[in-house]
Image (tube, rainbow, N blue to C red; front, side, top):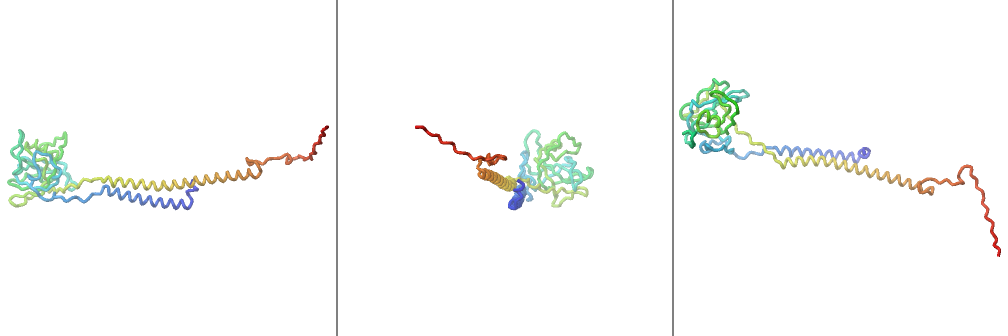
Length: 302
């Protein structure tokens, strides 16, 4: 079969099949890249600052539609309600988040035995490298602006210690502070009092958390097309192999027919069906031919 495949027409066919397969593979890669490509995000209003009391309600689940929304709230801090959350990074350096309880003015009050008269929300005010660098929150009426983020999950079986928390978790913080809270927290970008922006301090770094990128979605139709082009690439090589195999079989059949024809020709030449030459007695060595005389006629008596 190798001899058949080395025929010029089949070598040219192989080159064409390889080129065609290469084109199919490139098309498959293009479809694969399209299947995981981010579509342009829909217009969003997360950067538009909105009042917290209009965006989120206490005592309800945190809706994903308000995640990363820039909000503003007016209220007061309680210096006694402040914790540090360790293990937070700033420029690849580990440190602490300063998280303070913020009483939101005009926030709906929750009802229940353990509910507090005022509704609070945790505010991550900044980052410090050392716990000793964290100062108390500002006093008086403060207007906080920041990004609204869903509550984190508390770290199980971890005792962070006095004045510490394992995560910015509403479930954990309401037990520490014994207050009613919103189901989320605010990463502050500014604190304003009396129309003046309050500085964080020399050792405190602003968080400035950007919105989270949209979740990557897989386009299954493009993924199916990518697999389909790979199948086409393999099929083009299969077609070439199949044509070569068929040509090889035709050559074998032609060779068998030619051999049968030669056998028949040799058999007709000597008068024997099997192609074997018959040896007659006169042709045998030492054999002589004697004339035969006719038999005498017998007379019939009448």
